Length: 135
Image 1 (cartoon, rainbow, N blue to C red):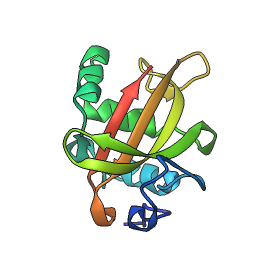
Image 2 (image 1 turned 30 degrees about the vertical axis):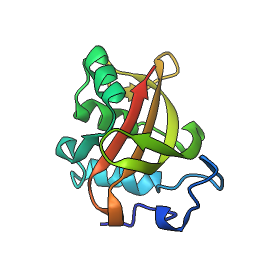
Image 3 (image 1 turned 45 degrees about the horizontal axis):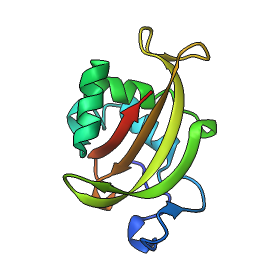
């Protein structure tokens, strides 16, 4: 499997909250892992109650999150930051705003803009830690 971290969180100071320097996770490698089934719905861990609630409101499963992430481009990147979670403590995350049509499961300028903030488990393993997803 390709290396997914561009910058390992262990080398990033925990303050300030915003992390400079671009994406922490290699989006293209992540999308390739999703396409090839290396990362699937079973590899998504929702680490915040508010995210879990939002997924329920959207009537989304973890596969829907992966479909949305598969449509992201580097232009959708909005920043990286340290995020506090309910389950796993403080984690380094990338945030993307993705114009996505959930009906046809494709990127679309006419689609809604979904804000997705995510991280990976320690040591570049397969667990995708979903922090937030909302409109």
